[in-house]
Amino acid sequence: LRTLNLGILAHVDAGKTTLTERLLYAAGVIDEVGSVDEGSTQTDSLELERRRGITIKSAVVSFVIDGVTVNLVDTPGHPDFIAEVERVLSLLDGAVLVVSAVEGVQAQTRVLMRALQRSRIPTLIFVNKTDRLGARPEEVELEMADLDDDPHPIYFGSAITGAGIDTLGHAIATLLPPSEGDPGGPVEATCFKVERGPAGERIAYVRMFSGTLRVRDRIDERRKVTAIKVFDHGGAVTRQATEAGEIAKLWGLGDIRIGDTLGAAKAAHDTHFAPPTLEAVIRSSGTANRGALYTALAQLAEQDPLINLRQDDVRQELYVSLYGEVQKEVIQETLAADFGLDVEFHDTTTICIERPNGTGAAVEIMHKPPNPILATIGLRVDQAPAGAGNEFRYEVELGSIPMAFHKAVEETVHAALRQGLNGWEVEDCTVTMTHAGYAPRQSHAHQGFSRAMSSTGADFRNLTPLVLMGALAQAGTTVYEPVQHFLLEVPADTAGPILPVLTKLRATPQAPAMRGRACTIEGEIPSARVHELQQQLLALTRGEGVLEVAFSSYQPVRGPAPSRPRTDNNPLNRREYLLRVLRRV
Ligand SMILES: Nc1nc2c(ncn2[C@@H]2O[C@H](COP(=O)(O)OP(=O)(O)OP(=O)(O)O)[C@@H](O)[C@H]2O)c(=O)[nH]1
Ligand SMILES: [Mg+2]
Image 1 (cartoon, protein in one colour):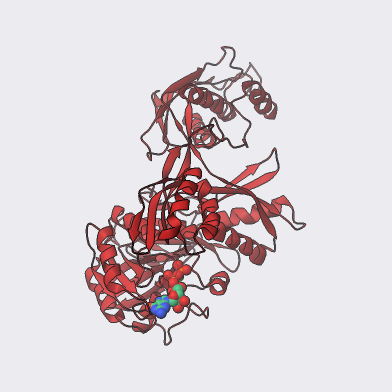
Image 2 (cartoon, rainbow, N blue to C red; image 1 turned 135 degrees about the vertical axis):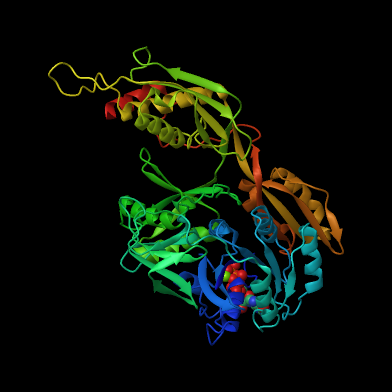
């Protein structure tokens, strides 16, 4: 049987989960079509999803059409949960992009379409809700043809009534290419989801790209597969093995994290969507201590790596990164329901990034003042093209210091880049090691190993941030803020007063376009000002204005650069830094 790993993607409320139910029903997996509004669907299985009637986590279900086993991944449509979509893109053989025939193409539809095109995922379009009053399928078809220079097959129908579902199902089975991969080859697999079982054990969802994994197979010295389940006919069934093409749940993989690979699989590094642009302080309002909150959040971050915890030991605060208000509420409710913790969010701010302005270099030589540490490190910082990410390179011979010290420097460089000159994460920065030296393991005659005379990993860890910040300071950095693309639709007679408001909020609107009695304005606006625009819009448009936003890019901050309080030992202040780290040693 051929296997097709299929993603269902769309803007919020387009009908992905309902369509999933309909396909399961058509394939004979369920006898009754479940309802999102009654909380009875297969894929919205979390308590919170059922209560809220929205999808929060991606979920997998399996069925057979026309002789093809389809592993369907139902994804959330709300932009706050875009990370869930990101994680499944790399495992898809094909996708159905759903658009509502009533609401039509939305900002999120464009974002998803671009991501599907960039990842070269064969896609079918399904225009849903044709049964509803106000459905305008022909117009939506035209809107999609603007959007898409390489048109995809398009289908129409209704997940509620079942119209058009058989045709869509047949197209899924015949037009989309099934997965390839040799079950006899070396094991290659990627983990895209982690959840905790009833006993608290970690369960990894992996997509098998090549080879076969069996129960009791060793992954490495520490880890062994202890159980396997494969998706089949609506549920997950226990198997002795899983092979190329399949999606499996694996037990026994210990501390596996989302994005980890097994065997020779290529790690997916390209990101298709914007990272979270908000950060907030999270505090427990009950009697629970900060340790309990940290443990709970760490467990959530395991299932959602972009929650990105930052701990500030100086101010005793915990920070989490966020996409938006709905995600905040979901985290709050999950902490209350699963961990019994009441939390509040404070001081929500926009997350900026820093990029180096050019090239800078610094070097510290051992035994040579002012370097008090027993290690030699030279680093050069270069600006990389936007979006290239951070990279660490060597210009010294690999044998010049022991491998463990190389590793220590590399790891510390990546950690130290999380806080640049203004405290923001440094991006698109190439760091090259230009000097390296150490004092070999020595001892006085008849005495044991002497710390005072021999370099240790800690020496390299302590010295690296100092050298790196020296190089970065020489290069200089620019702070960039996240900017959203907005599409504003307002009654034509209210457009006049809106333009000056947009300018005041530092937006850059294009010329307004009139469409009958409606006026649309497109442009860019700093993420930090979207909330204000939303609030003012109500009064300015008698509540009739509709605002759509989607992340566009990072732009240099005009005026004084905002900074973020540091949570490390502050290598920018040499004296204090050395006092802190040397005392700690
Ligand atoms: N009339 C009509 N309503 C539909 C149709 N499909 C879905 N709905 C309704 O639209 C609402 C949203 O449906 P969902 O299936 O939850 O949409 P979704 O795309 O999964 O939403 P998220 O996962 O939260 O992004 C529900 O109230 C559905 O009953 C359809 O074809 N016709
Ligand atoms: Mg859904």
